[in-house]
Image (cartoon, rainbow, N blue to C red; front, side):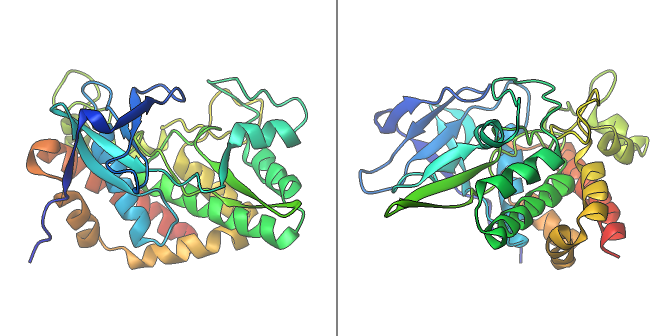
Length: 301
């Protein structure tokens, strides 16, 4: 028996707390009741599926036991969007990747928004090693980040830039403790930017011409391999190279992929309410994940 559609939460104007300045999309923080958590509501950019991409990605992460921000469908004044539960607060402060890198990698520019070629995997891992005094803690964080990169490769998330990962820190006595923040902001995935039917590159044409693989392989991610590269690697190619260089870090996430089956992925997609995602968008998201899954399976084997 199929699962029911995902719940849609209606946000009341009096719940709104403040706008969020970080990032390029319009969004605001809200709280339904004083004793409940804060949530970040995001308006999807026009003619995109950023809201359903966020929700599907979170559900996939849950199936793979990848630590992720909770995401729900939400509506504000008749506008469809997504809402993410805050994971900071309670004495825990979020330090984004650009802050971590700027504090540990010589010459790193934390304010560069596009084509930050110093946002290399080698620099990220070096920054994590420098940020954590205990090697086992740094190792644990790097394994968690490898989880996130495998998720990115599966869903085609191209926006793992230096403000889309981070570390949560809190003070214990005179010392500081920290963990990798849950993975968040997966709006740039699953072909969310494509139109169903239009001239040029669109879902229908890519499906009809069997070019899902081409779409995935040509994607430009936000993590670079060398700082001389013009573009970041595709999420899939990044994991191919990274898993070959750091097999121990990527083995756990790649092994957990065996839990996912095509029908399970389809079930996650099918729970998106009928008027929130077109049938072509559903088919494309499914086929994209299936292609990426098969490619990741080659690494796992």
